[in-house]
Length: 109
Image (cartoon, rainbow, N blue to C red):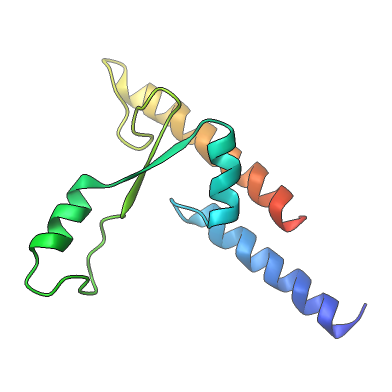
């Protein structure tokens, strides 16, 4: 195993872990998720806060600029309906599993 291939493999593992930990993954993984029906929409709350701030894009703003929604348009991390807690848990698990599976195929892990 050459040094270059060792570093390439290490890079792929770091990128995979970054995508698994992040709520919004990198573009390559995001495209795979979009193909499966997941949607990524701009976060209205974050946009409003950034546009009304005295100094836009200041560090420390923890709101994501995008939100993940299901095929039907439900926010993955908010859930909907009466059985919100169970639906939210199931939806998050489905999204996380899809994200891991696609990231593995993108990075060859």
